[in-house]
Amino acid sequence: MDALSDRFDQLQDLLSSADSVVVTGHENADGDAVGAVAALRRHLELADRNVTALLSAPLSPRYDFMEFGRRYEVYADDRHRELVTGADVFVMCDLSTWGRLGPLEEPARAGTATTVCIDHHPCEGDGPADLNLLDPTATATGRLVYDYIRHVDGQVDREIAESVFVSLSTDTGWFRYPNTSADVMELVADLSQHRLDLPAMYRAIYQSNSVPMLRLIGQVARTVNEECGGRFVWATVRRQFLDDLGVERYESDPVLDLLRSGEGVSVVALFTELEDGRMSVSLRSRGTPDMNEVARKFGGGGHVYAAGTTFPADEAERYRRDMVAMIRRIVGRT
Ligand SMILES: [Mn+2]
Image (tube, rainbow, N blue to C red; front, side, top):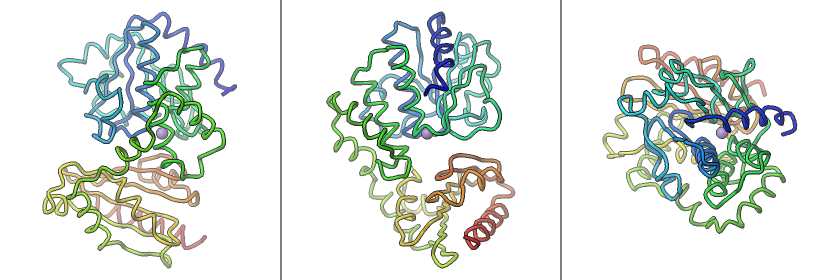
C-alpha cells in the first residue's frame, strides 16, 4: 500500500475537483470487478460527487443481493455515450487492458476524461490509463479500492463493507485459494461488523445454480479429458449442450469448480463455444504452471492461478488443439 500512497493522493486530487465521474469494470464483470466498482461508486456518492457506475451487461443474478444491484446502469450507446465522452474522470477497475472494456472501450478512448486504472492483474508497462494504481500483489481490486478509501479517511458504511467483502470472497474462491492471507482474514473480521450475512451471501453466490445448469455440469463432467496422469483435465461446453438442456444463463465458475475438485488435478482448461462461433477459454492452476503466461500466448491474460482468453471463430478448433498440446508439454515437464 505504501508504494501506492502518492498515487492515492493524486487520485484524491483528481476526484475532488471532478464534476462528473464514471466508474466501470471489465466485461462479464466477476465478483471482484463488481465489488470494486460498487465500493468506489458508494465512496464517491458519500463524498457528494456526481458519479455513475456503468457495466457492459446486467449483473449476474448471483449478485442481486447487493445494494449495488440497484445502483448501476447497463451501458447503452444512445443513453450513455455523452456521459462517458464528457466525464471529467473515467475509472476502470479490475482490468488493465482497454480491450476488456467491451462496448465502453470506444467511447472511453474517444472522450476527454482523465483515465484511471485500479487493478491487481500483472501488467506489462505502466498501465493503460493516465493514472494507474496497480498492485499485482493485492488479493483483489476491491482491496485496493478499500485501501484508497481508508487512505483518504473516507467513511466505510454497510454498502462499502458488503462490496469489498464480495471482492475479497470471490477472488479468493471463498477464502480457499493461496491468496487468502492473514491480512485478508483480518479485513474480513472488520467488514463483518457491518451486519453482513455471510451464509446468505455464500448461498447467493455459490449455491444458486438452476436445474438446467446442474444438468449441464453433469453433461460436461461426462466429457472430461484427462492428460498427464490426471494432473491436467479439460472439457468443452458445446452450444448444443446449452440448447438441449435449456440453459438460459450459463456461467463457467460452477463447471470450473467441479473440474478442479478432481484428485491430483493441477491444471484445468474449460473451452466454451460462444454463439458467434468464437470460443472462450478459462484456465485454472494451483500456482504452477503460470496460467497468465499460457493465456498471453493466445492473446489473453490474467493471474498465475486464473487466466483466460477468447479464440477467433475461424481458428477456434486449431487454437484449442495448440493450447491443449502446450499445457500438456508444460505439465508433463513438472
Ligand atoms: Mn480481480
